[in-house]
Image 1 (spheres, rainbow, N blue to C red):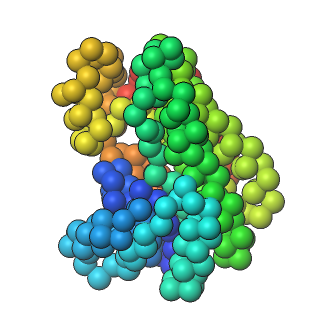
Image 2 (cartoon, rainbow, N blue to C red; image 1 turned 120 degrees about the horizontal axis):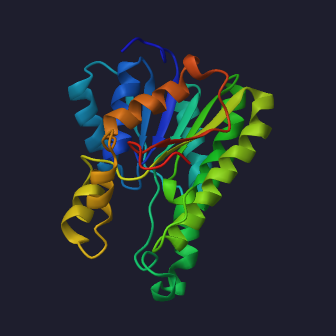
Length: 259
């Protein structure tokens, strides 16, 4: 890959996960300094060790922080600027959901609704709020959030997940209009199922009642995406080739829908 991100510093939340790790690797290959973020420092350090095996001599920093904690996000950004000198890109892959919020709405657990909001949208708001001043100080940059097509296309058993993913999409679109005044672009990558990930493997093995992943695999005539393919799109959105793109929610689903 060409060094299109040479001299740039990119933070990847959830960087120790399957998709986040691949984004980190491709960002390093593109010349960036990468900050690998996860909740646990040991996971960050293990991911960095693997990354340096793949891209020897690259600049990768392990920095743990819980993005559901706003103060932790502020400290994370301050630490990045102190160690790397700047922040040019934020890729938010730390998207999760508690148990008890999938399936039919009547069967979901209202006690888990606050946790769902925190894990699905509040953590995105936290890291964006904390990072925007640093991106402005760097002269501009890019925010790329991850969501899901559940936020675009209504479907049974997705009431809670879909509503929170839709909230993340609208947040990014609205923020894009504000941040463009400071040369900060905000976009969203929206997959459905992603092959070669632990989540996909788990659903295929453990969720025969819904059969969602199997049906999606069959219906996606172009094939479901892999972490590497999502990473390539993400790095494009962080780089100069997408300089005029902001406020976009880009579905990557192999042809499951055209929403």
